[in-house]
Image 1 (tube, protein in one colour):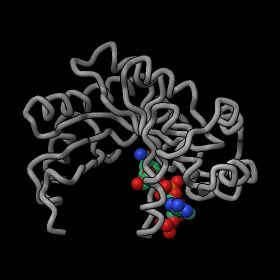
Image 2 (cartoon, protein in one colour):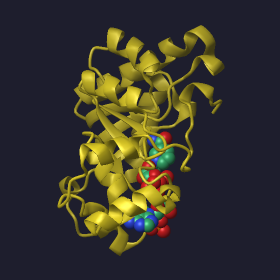
Image 3 (spheres, rainbow, N blue to C red):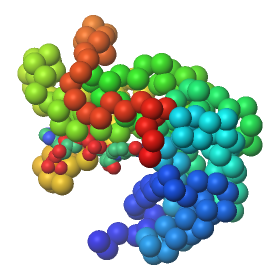
Image 4 (tube, protein in one colour):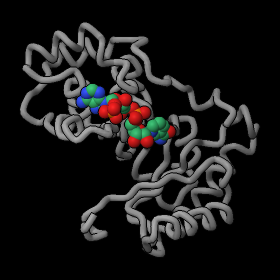
Length: 219
Ligand SMILES: NC(=O)c1ccc[n+]([C@@H]2O[C@H](COP(=O)([O-])OP(=O)(O)OC[C@H]3O[C@@H](n4cnc5c(N)ncnc54)[C@H](OP(=O)(O)O)[C@@H]3O)[C@@H](O)[C@H]2O)c1
């Protein structure tokens, strides 16, 4: 690319089979090797160990994994450490027992799947929420309410979805393989949704996306 390493922000995640202190360290080192770099900007635990799969051990497994993240952070190998798909019940135990609290929680948030409680909990604890699938994997884009609001501001439906995230103080992570869409998804700072529009969008349901409940999955 010709870009310097410090011009790129690299996030990676620890996969679910690699939980626990030793495996997390080994997996992180393998990630650095694969990416041919000597540090990550952000590293996340991809999914919490949940009670459905791990019973009473779930919280301890998450903490054991987190200890590895804390040590790698202290060694300067990761600039920021966080989690993904953690709900308040998973975060509570970590916050009570961790030395360094998670800085980021990357969760699914989009119109139709607002995750209000989890967002408020994270914001109370100064944890930045990143929204994955902020367009509901493109399924939200055909919603008529969003389309009407987009027309009013002479923007696109995708931009309205992203703006709705930004105005809640969260960081949407839209994915596109098209240059024009990547540019479009950045241009969301020249209009502002009203409080009513924020509420209307927040009350939409069932627009698509994965809408996974982290405690109910078994992977
Ligand atoms: N932490 C987790 O557990 C987790 C889970 C799933 C995903 N993620 C991450 O979340 C990020 C985004 O999620 P996602 O890709 O699943 O869903 P998304 O960003 O909500 O939607 C992506 C879809 O929307 C289309 N799109 C993007 N911008 C558009 C625009 N301006 N107009 C029209 N269509 C547009 C893309 O098509 P084109 O690419 O063809 O433009 C693609 O089909 C990814 O980086 C992914 O790695 C994280």
